[in-house]
Length: 237
Image (cartoon, rainbow, N blue to C red; front, side, top):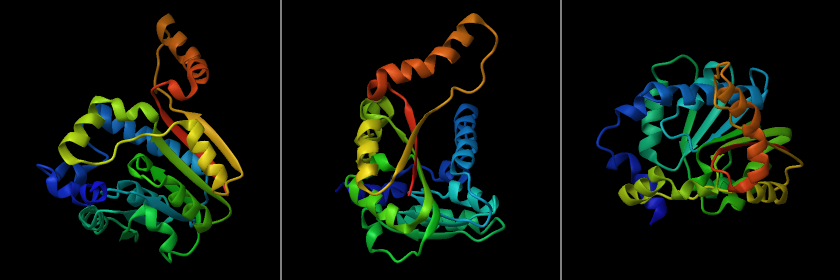
């Protein structure tokens, strides 16, 4: 039933406007999305013209923005309703982005060709058979291809937003520990795996802000998988 709930998710919303407007919304949410996209470009570090596979795109804003940056993008999502919104929005912009409705756990059965990079932005915590998905990702990437994921930590499942999403929509909200994530990536055939911590953005010169900026990475390192955070994971094929 979990996949049915993921497929039908957009039909159960009171309004689709926030999906169509994404990444724009409340100022603090927009700021997070814009920072994330800047980090995505920085970490993928691919030249214009590269082929990128974008997983679980939802309403497709990351795919469309990657296309505007000069990449050739294929975006996948399990929900045909989401893909309809993504295509609708893409028609308003320059460039061509290919969108397909597909189950990420069936990625290995799709004939999509090969890619220079792959992005999984805030989606893998919805996937139950993560090993199947990551093995398929590795096979779609060319040698030296870059896979970038931005995911919430394992305790994401206990957050208010996750509990509410499961209650209202029945979707899967699990999260994954960096240690388990790294283990699956290695088994899937990735040879170089680097974890990055999310920045809190701007900080001023006050003692408290400086201390928070300086010691937060140390706290992340000490707490490891038990610290509530989002995790960037970059893996090279």
